[in-house]
Length: 89
Image 1 (cartoon, helix red, strand yellow):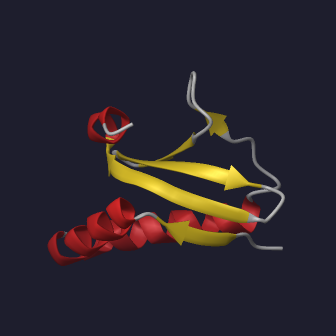
Image 2 (tube, one colour):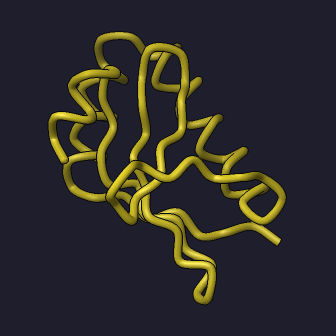
């Protein structure tokens, strides 16, 4: 069963800008998020050191997200290039 995906305002703004500049990369990242929602129970999530958030790699981009297993929700909090995403925490 799929998880529901919710986006922070930062993540939404990032996708809008990325879709205008490089739509194929934005599409790849959205495909990866859909895969995550479908496979959230089957995969091992990579927790960030000292944080409750998890990280998902998609090429040179990182998705930082929270996972609510009880309510079956994935909250995409931060999306950005590798170093940029981690600095925003």
